[in-house]
Image (cartoon, rainbow, N blue to C red; front, side, top):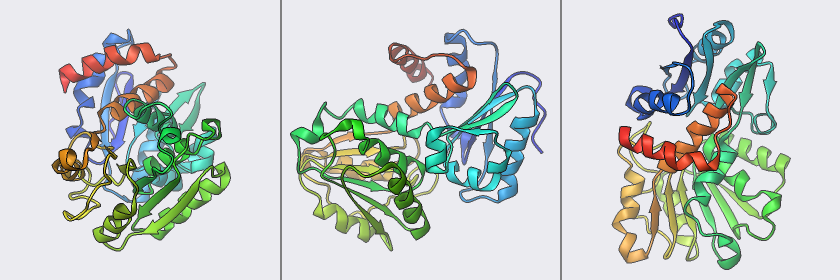
Length: 312
């Protein structure tokens, strides 16, 4: 049973929420942004948790006056599948993707938002050079994981407004064929601007094989959650990253096995290795802006990031 909130409360729906830096950062951001005193409460559900747990938290947010909304991680697709009937509104990306990363209340209506296509793009732009795919036309992308974050990044990479600035090919791998089928359906709806290959993984060596095929300068992304919510890496220790490539670990906390695999090859393969910190910052600030109905501009991000680093 979720406790009745005694003051305005923001919920964090995840797997191991108490370990997240946001539990220390959120109160500082609330103060920095001049918002009213607001509590943050974590709600943990195991990966692929039971439907009644998802319905419990969504119903709670809809019915409790002091419940402002939530950020959803890991369970973005499952929460819609289990509790989508509670929502009065889904934004365009939520409709297309069948997932949400943000829950907000506005005028008594429960609203679901898929913010990841925006935050994935902001995170990528923070370290990938401008017009990178035009200047490196042979480069591909390997997205390990076809869950919400992986699909969102693929959608951002294929946005029509990018014109010719798209990878030569995108590989998306996942163990569950149902996730790959869902990813394919999303791409059918949004339209592909480059070639996409969907790879079912039977072992880490499957990902290793795709990795070996990537041209120089390619981008490799861990969007599986492994190394944070689950132990291990989607690659074996024999994996070889593409020379002059970019490696993006979506996680910023946990064992980060994937990132450490890349760091061991950083000098030898001339890699740029990034963790998920800036993705974390953009993800949370985009959701807070929606829930609190405020504007958080690009100019605010360095200040909020500095506050967050101090609490990390």
